[in-house]
Image (cartoon, one colour):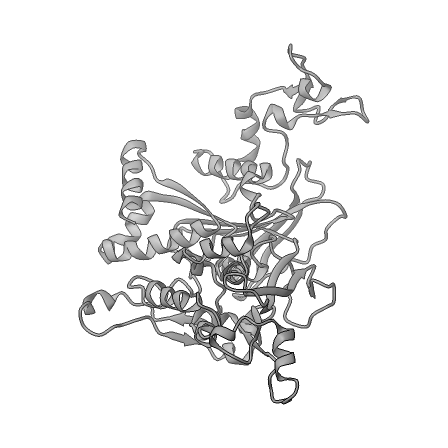
Length: 468
């Protein structure tokens, strides 16, 4: 953490201005921990000033604000992501990383003691952050998630006989007919984060005790922060929360004994997905639960990604535009939309086969601070950082922020024209370069097709003036 602080301070001295933080996925958890650690290193009165001096904007991309159920799958059965490695081997490797628990799902209704006085009790009694859950945790289903994160069948025996298959257990107890069949247990996100799940399973899997130790020492007992708790808006001047939506995303799992020895002793018998406002199983059957209005980015559920919408104020400006270059004819705007701290859903339409980007912007609720949420249709978790659309929007927003003639709080969304030669292309229907007001046909030796010969008429610097 000290090296991160030194990096920011060195950048300020060398460049003369604050830095831009761009964090993706787990990197957002690391940055959150850095901000909490910094509170212990800097005098309280100087903390906000240090942030203002050293960090201009924070771009949180694909942030698992409330965790990701996919971590559960990797912990219990392994996740190879297509690599030619056995899932059991992947599971062994994954469970050696103490940071793996950092992505476990947790409840939005439960918080830990937000304290920093533990450091003054070193050498005395063991102090750890205690969970305090809102009554909504027990009134709502599934800790606010779409469904239970874990559904697992545990054998009727423990110890060395734990890894019998379901059929073996059934045959061994069929004659007595005495509760010999496996028992199915379900665990919510809260029960994963507070250790209830690990304590219930420690007699059935040799790796669970190690995971429970990691959870209690490095998370529940961390002197700075219990990261398995909801994140309040950091006191930074500018925050942009960016993620993909509308992809089929895993939100829950069913596990059962496989009959094989560790690490292959569990198999995934079913998976619950969210997609298009509904829940369904791997077999295609609809599942009851609490589906969100959208689905996630293929890795992190919408419920977790969209937590940063709670950082927006009571009045939000919403704009929805096509992701591709456009002339403004399909731009939808809703000003001063009411927002009451939960999700906010615009009353806007989508044309078929068009990918949109929805902007939720608030520059009024916190004086001197801006908060924005960008939702990109069909942008996947792992590929969003390579998205040309995201890179274009980042470039425009940062350029807008540093330009002395910028008049608005956020870059205009009225239109998106080509900004690079690569954005120009040949329109075969009209037999000319598309965007004729910005692009022209200009052959250069080496071009192998018509699209390569379409180039900008003016420089990018001149075109950028339209976005102030």
